[in-house]
Length: 219
Image 1 (tube, rainbow, N blue to C red):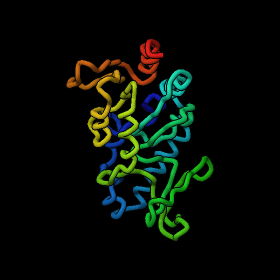
Image 2: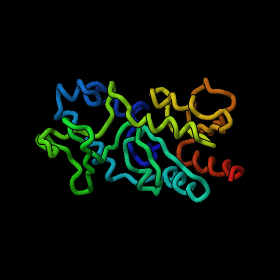
Image 3: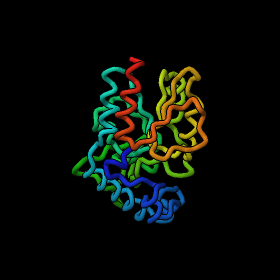
Image 4: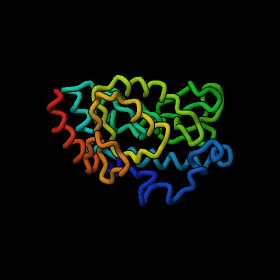
């Protein structure tokens, strides 16, 4: 979804995992082994995000709120949906512009344009080191509890720019009501899809534009 905004993906060619061992920078084991490396990795991601802008795909989804109740469930950790104007965004894998306590996960702090780095020695009010507010590999995805009923109540379900390989998020498709039209926007869609899925083989920007045209009949 955010690739067209210049945000590096993790799995595609040229993505982040070509330069980093996932377990070194996105797992609790990596955090325990070398927290400074992990903090630096996400500080670089944050710096990248601060110079990025929402693309036409983000803006197109926000504009759909003029005609529909739009609820976005995202695996992305950036804030580009919110900056584009979307008002209901659920982040499954955490939020890059937030930090949280390593002692009490409910202590979450919002970072801003002037204070976006998390450094060793930065602590919460309890005195414990702050960490990125990110769901790392091997950790539970707490927002799935909210995501499932959102999908179950959907009248229309759309998947945009995901490999459908990362669980549990990829499993959300099975919770969509049988009566709900399902759209998939991806320039390289998976081959093993139910015939009932409407495939839009385009990038996020062009794909959302096409989606808006196709949704006109549901207004």
